[in-house]
Amino acid sequence: MMAALHSLYRKGRDQWLFQLRDSEPGVVTLTMRRVFILPTRAGLAFTVLLLVMLIGAINYNLGLGFALTFFTGACAVADMVMTARNLALLQLACGRAQPVFAGEEAQFELHVLNRSRRDRFAVWMGFQADGEPRQVLDVPAGGSSALQLSAAARRRGWLPAPRVRLVTRFPLGLFRAWAYWQPDARVLVYPAPELPPQPLPSTGAASEDGHGTVGLDNFAGIRSYQPGDPLRHLAWRQIARHDPALGGQLVTKHFEGGAVAELCLDFAALPLQLDLELKLARMARWVLEAEQRALPYRFKLAEHDYGPALGDAHRASCLRALALFGQEGGA
Image (tube, rainbow, N blue to C red):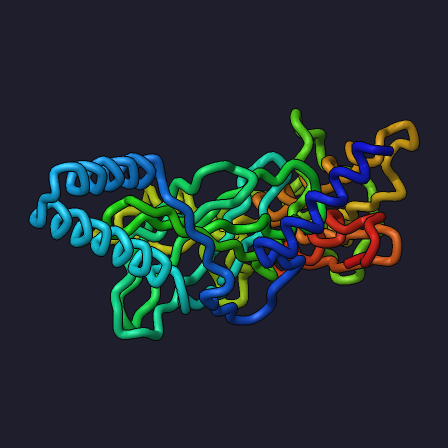
């Protein structure tokens, strides 16, 4: 009970003190109130040095000692102001994030815009949970810079972007200024395909036009290309062997047979004893294999019934349904 209260207290304190927000859509501006600054170890040592110089100037009544001490202190104050201004008024925005499979690294594209007339140098960025930022960028005056931060995608579904921390010690390194930003971005994580892969299902309904899993067991040979032949049936290996200088030509694979079984990837047809995540992993593997082999396939998962079709859009729709299956919010 006490641990929970302490954790709640620390969370509320950090949100109030460091201006932490749950999500920040659109373009976010780092106002001066959101920039925090403290001296570094070098800055603390520099402060001790200033005190020693001041004591020496007082003890020996050295006019030049006072001048040097105050001038050096003024340089430190100027460094503090310039360090804070190196982050202040920067604008932050999210870019596009491509879906990944569970177990891979999700890449979040982030943009830093500088609308002021001053160049910004040595701005370090990274996710707060990863410790000290490891990527650095410079932002020219009136320009922008972009970088990608990676986060581990451990499970399927939506992966929100972690909180980002920006840090700078420019120009002298006596002070460390930092700010926080919670991007309004997320990445869709597909189920990790099953390993080792299982054979594609061989059962399904017959299609009316005689097409379906053509190419699985009724390959008849190679013939010359004819207008209207599907591009996916081109025999690329044989085409590569033909020398264009000797009159090489396009050839295509020829299939025989009438209506054949349509390739159907049906979640309900999987063995009942399989774990849910294993079922989703097997369906993901079958989708990728059908796409790789250019086999039009039908996809059935709960209320989702797609196809038969082939291509990037069909593949994305099927994998999205697998990634969000059973999760709150649906697909």
